[in-house]
Image 1 (cartoon, rainbow, N blue to C red):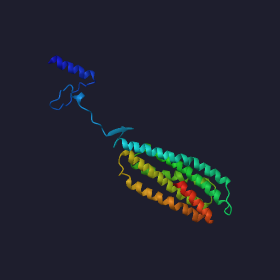
Image 2 (cartoon, rainbow, N blue to C red):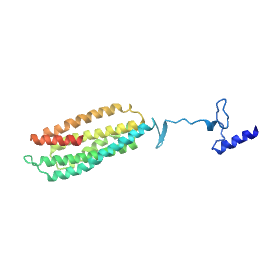
Image 3 (cartoon, rainbow, N blue to C red):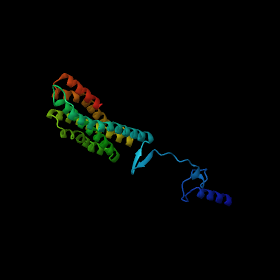
Image 4 (spheres, rainbow, N blue to C red):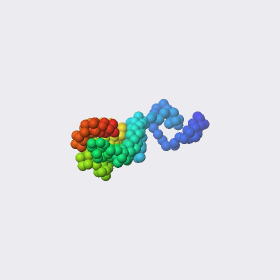
Amino acid sequence: ADRSHGAKLMEFYSRGGSPRRTKVPAGEDPCLAPLERKPQKSREFLVNGERWTGGGWRTMASMVYCLAQFLVAVPDAVLGPTLTALGHQVSCAEEGEICPAMLEAIGWNRTGAAVSVILAWALSQCINGHYVLAMGFSMVSASFLVAPFSTTPYMVHVSFFFIGLGKGLASLNSTALMVALRQGNTKKLSKWVNLLSIFWGLGSIFTPLLVSLTTLKDFRLSFFTVAVMTFSHA
């Protein structure tokens, strides 16, 4: 009996067993019980010292969402300077300065859009919880402060202020949604996400019309501008 018990102890220690005493259910061998029990899969894991719950699908959804944000930001970063350059070269009959100014302003706006998306993603990696809702408002300034650097008419600047404001809110929306996914608590920020989504949707529809009504007089040019801006915002 002693040899059998000693052999079990040798097997236990050779397989990485611990000499510390643990509670063993009745009917199990105190030496081999820790080896025979199957460890339960924990749904909690630590990332950067913080405990996140929920498991793999939320992490995967967050990664896919971040990738989608970057795929959107890349064409914005290319489209912005391209339209800005075209604004200095293209001239429109009857309206003179407005068409180049609009192209230039759209270019600046798309550049700000790319910057705001990337900054929103960076915030979602570094900041959690309600701090995102506070810091996310910096995305508003990141998207519309680039517009005044372009040589555009005053009303176009005012209109693009609202465009940048909408894009900043959309970036805050993206950040809040990513944090909600990463924390495994989609209800925590759901009200903010829904509210900002509504604002962004309304801004995408009415802002091009606002620009058209306040800065353009020619119907054909107005239609062209609304079409271009709607496409760029989509």
